[in-house]
Length: 108
Image 1 (cartoon, helix red, strand yellow):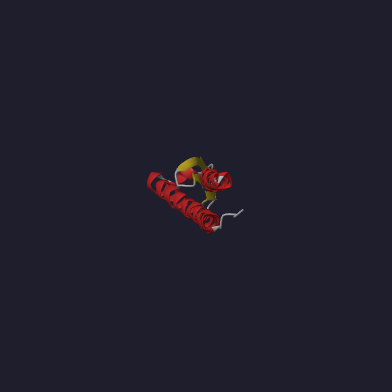
Image 2 (cartoon, one colour; image 1 turned 90 degrees about the vertical axis):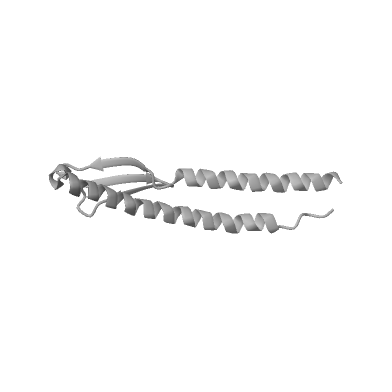
């Protein structure tokens, strides 16, 4: 009967490790995007939060409102790419986790 508990523990550990790996992959997402005019570069994380902002020389000539719009538009594009990466990671996780959950335990 000990083998059944060992199998249960091994399956639970594999599932937990899979969840930890998912979290690490999410945390590692970072997307950098530059505006078409090369004046604004932003970086976002896996939840779309701004983690970096770089303005090229001449960006101030756009004026406050236009510069703000450029920053928001560039950040939105970066966030879309980050969300696409997150979705791909999630899809991969769902497939592999389903295999873990549905795997038949060994019988002895």
